[in-house]
Length: 406
Image (cartoon, rainbow, N blue to C red):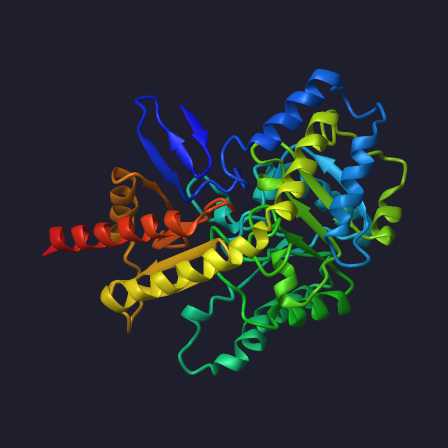
């Protein structure tokens, strides 16, 4: 098997348009990243006890993409490692273990992160919500009560966080951490109501907690309008974690925080990661930043993403099974329902569309609590021709599945 640009080629030579794998942020086997990795590996790669210029250069370049105040970077090898470090910092800084998360959130594979991930602890094999974790409602405007005015969605959904803080206070406890993906992904590509994060961050900080943005899936310009999805909510987190697309397939991750939190974490118990921030990883990370900037890929994500949303809405006008279309940049979802009034999830239909698209050479996925949201995260180099091919295959697949059911 091999990858090239937006395409994956299987062992028989068949090509698939990859609209799901957001690790290959710039497309599979991007030549600039391949060259950067190979050149640095030929010079030096070692553990991070040895100093090298690339880690300083990369930290400076990375923090320059973030709002003022987020200025101290640490490096790891996966999003899970970055979130584990975030949790250590939050607990050290606040002295509290209590955390508020969003229902159906997912933040990593270690046990401490599974404990913060309703997507894991509420499903098969999970042991339920731990005592130190408090769960707020998914702020999904599509499934908000019909009587809620749209302009009140942010405040209404944020009230769920206020309820968790009140429940803690009643038990003599207080939040140490609010953790959420800036766009909840496994929850079904859920775009937060405007103003939601401002409401939540203010109440969490007033209670003495800190706010962390999990940008592992949605960061590095994928939303098009900004480098980071939290910026669309006009907030600045206390900690930001990053992973998946950071090295275009090279295993790398990062955390960026404030000087205040970094100083409180500097208590004698060092953070050391053998491979986090090694020379080859930093070379890969720098190449990714270079290509995003040089090739104006944020602008491409915004343009092609808007075009895809428009085309998806044209499909929605023809297929009643499409209940909602949502997306920003190249982070997109189509929610399928059995009835637009009841919004009963069309889980089986979504699975058949997913399988049918794959059979026709396009890779997408399904997510959400009912697994009824078609999930698409194509590479940042996605072209209009790629977009037309994706829409054409979806159109053909919807028609075929409906014909089979007739």
